[in-house]
Length: 166
Image (cartoon, rainbow, N blue to C red; front, top):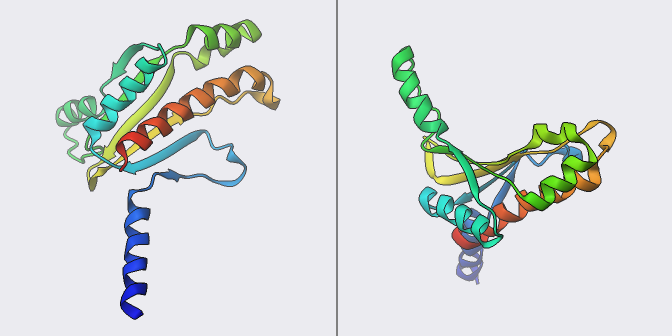
């Protein structure tokens, strides 16, 4: 009986370690950044994100290689602290969602292109973080056109976690 309980608890712990985690999911859901993490291979997650975009008919408009830039400039500045294992920012757009958003308020251009950050930390390179900035405007004006963008970002991240976070 005792051994069965220990086995059950160990199984639960191992499932928890593999499950995606929303990090910094605080009070009210209005944090400026939404961060998920999953135990997976960084390259698998990165490729999965690009495939998820492609599956929705979306195209990567650019990639910012933040981790590589910090490594390169850190050496030049004499700063050796390693901030990331790997870190890239993927940028993309959706013609339909963006059009709706910008027709509602042309100042929402500040939210374009959409970005998903994918990174690991040097102390645990098998935990991959995926994050995005919330699209928040004063008094929730434009919420009806900003929410679909967040749902798209969230959906892409959850799809990747589901595929590669096992």
